[in-house]
Length: 362
Image (cartoon, rainbow, N blue to C red; front, side, top):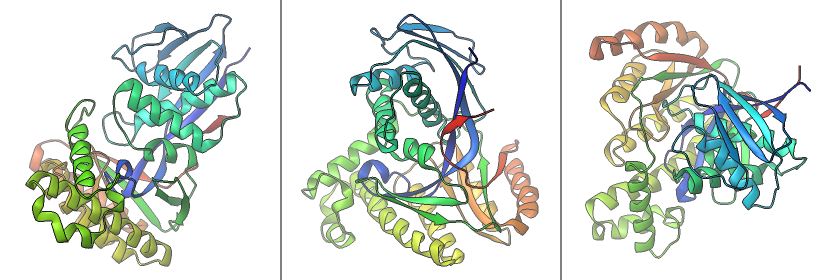
């Protein structure tokens, strides 16, 4: 029997960073980098996992799945979460391949999870609603892998729409597409500074947000208004105050940015991108000198509307919105400025938004 092949895209977030796990708004777009998985059924109730990117091969019983502290934890976590949610699985051999840059903040983990979820659910004959599938993948990463991520990455990998970003309300998962016209381009600049977030500063910042929400008598910072925050911010510790100021401001910026993009006010959208980066740099402290240099270099290119770090931070990528006509100058000047500062060139990816996860029909 020929294997069935499923693939799921990575993503870039245009604005709305570290707001997802605070119940706020985000504006991601799925991009044309994919994790694909070829799946074949096997008789035993186990998973056989291999990848073109890693040398390890794993055979794990579906009845005894436990973290291995390796790349296989992501697909194993999905299997564990599916079964925990009542979807009994059958055994399968899964072979992965991916061109989503790892460690760049473009959500290689969510692409791996979502492609796995589609493959395992289809193999077992389950038709799972897409929102529920995103929640299951998030649960796998949060509870099995130990990375307490928000819902955005898995959601956009499933719900991406060609030529659109989506404005996602991370509290109730309502969303609407926001058009990105053909004449605009998304250019991702990879600093090639890798980050490892599990058990790291990401979770520390999440705890700071929870502390701030509790101080205001709320479950989520989403429910703290800018006026409420400003009236009592001096009662918070300096670190918690900074984290909350970013999140509350970023939620407001994202809503305004969606309206600007919808109405074609790309200059306004770009101003909000720069403001987002500054807040992430100063208040959330998740930027680095490499990301700051990429944003500064992008800002000097005519036809670039805005630029900011994207993803969890501590390295990774920036995202820049620009006219298509600005791309050649960007590809010439930004790498030169970066190489002059750091002695190496960034990775550059010119993108358009794509559709979400699907089966590949040959």
